[in-house]
Image (cartoon, rainbow, N blue to C red; front, side, top):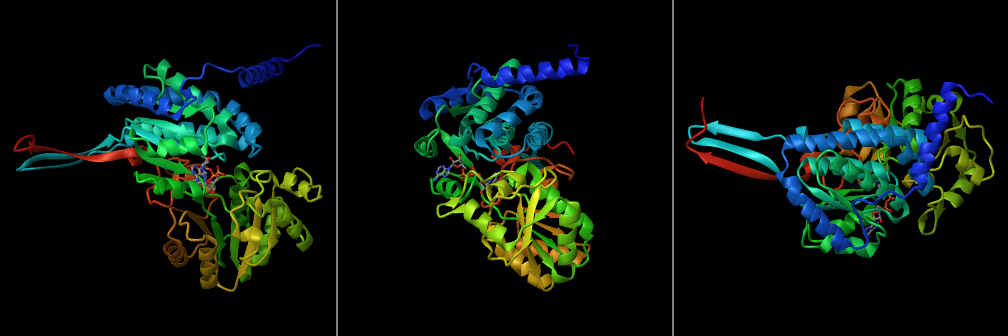
Length: 461
Ligand code: NAD
């Protein structure tokens, strides 16, 4: 049998990926005990503190490079371990993190000079940061957090999601190896072999942790904000996409379904439901079904979906981040691969609409006019102040919606992922501090403000 050059290259790539998935590597930055992890990160921070910005950038450049090289491995590992998401989209997410997470250039100095001398506000590190990460974007969040925190001169200890330990620790190991290879220390980020709620408690109350950063649902954000330490809380959302009578309805259908189905709806910013004004509602659903691969669920299928995806204890974890095809299979419906989303029209209180599902299920709520649509969207966002999206050509409507929703992110006339820098301007982050107000976090978020004052001299105007 003869193989072409391309076939051989593909085969080699597959075998290397398999070996890397199956072979445990030396685990740089991985510990059994939270106290040991914090001690190691503290030692590493002393080295980082003394590194020049240029030296930090060399390390960050290598983390970016390794992330791109490992994007497919991390994507496959994440999907295999958590059962959530889509490999192709996860590769895109890792490349986005590698290319668009800000580094040391994000640290800006403010200066005043005058007759009385020179005063600077410098952005200095906190020290060792304790961070908690979700299972929905495990390695993406770890890489993004570490680049920003390290750029600002910190090191970080992660208490990762127990359901994503393998993927998270692969990323931690990769980052530390990248640091050492580029002349930095190991343990710039640390994590545990078996993270638990108890180890998270140790981290939250440890004297050497200066700042806590929680990325996850409401429980963890509340826990961090109750710790007595300074906390940055990147919590849950339930982003509505509003479509008004001035929208390009056909494009809105395309953008909304693209955003909703990205990584099977795992991103916290992704469209979770639609509110459409009456005059365009039918047309929007028609485009979604006829052109965007949406399956129109009957009342019977909606009821079966409710019973399957929502349990008395909350979401059925086996359904989170699954494809529309897989979800429909669970309720006895076989659909072709071209179906990528499930839709239906319902009241805002419908459990598949009001709940943050993190699945490609996109209920449509009909509103009598724009004001009614805003009211419904506001109710559906549940006061998270996280993300909301709008499709409209009316500037007054866009402004009124933005003010009413008061969210950290508001995408106009595009898919939600434009807010992550994917097809939109601006940098990328996977920690959106909705609840505590820092918004899209980056290196500057992980700094302390320091005023440096020189009297009499250094004004040379
Ligand atoms: P989750 O809340 O179940 O878990 C997140 C992390 O918090 C995990 O590491 C978990 O072990 C830990 N945790 C949970 N409760 C805790 C507690 N009481 N004390 C200490 N640690 C605790 O969330 P998930 O399913 O992994 O992620 C999905 C959720 O996260 C969604 O609600 C989504 O909107 C949100 N999210 C928000 C952002 C953002 O940037 N705002 C980003 C990603 C995910």
